Length: 328
Image 1: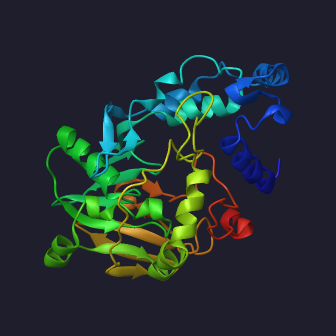
Image 2: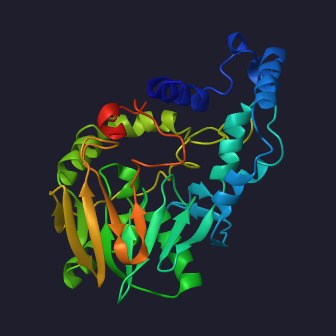
């Protein structure tokens, strides 16, 4: 299947698990009609569902799993960390079995050890937040979408890893789920007072503001459709968002970078850690970069390299990805 076909199929499956009788769905109840059940059963029989390697990979390094809810200031539920308990056992008739398996893999929520000196927080938002040990604190990579989810994630890390300060911030690219929660890990006043290094790819502010300010209202509304914001979390509603479990629609913020990566390859030392950045514009995002940490033999592919489901044509109206540039 071509990349374009995958992208369009992904958008349709996630938004329309039950779109009416003509789609083979049992009317207003959302129960699967006989045709849907038969098609899903046929697909299940064709898949190697007994292969558990993906589940072992997804759970590797798990240190702690959170519970409860992340709330907004007015008490609205932004993230229900316990919402995915229904994802157990074989796929029900209402859900494509491949999507069900993918949703189970994405439901590994918690604090993970990637390797010595690197931890990740997964499932607190649609993206992951990475913590890299520096000499004096954590270098935070991609602090999620919302202040509330980022604050909850870093608080959870501190419960288990110690109360370390933030010593630098890295935004790998210009999509809101990778910078919008920065005010949950530091404040504008603290960042300015401490001269906190904030590193991003060249063109970051232009792309971030054009996408999230100039057309932010329309894109925010449309993203609710793309990411199933108001669907119930169950086997007849919202199962997964492809990239992750779901978006935290909380308080969005941004801090301007203090250092832009403009060269094709550029080295920078942050809190005693040597980074080698690679500027990769017009790939998964118009402004994007990857990096490696040679001392740890670690590489961050941003969202250019993912094991989850991505898209080329975002329903919310973000710029269409350059598939050739991305693949290259």
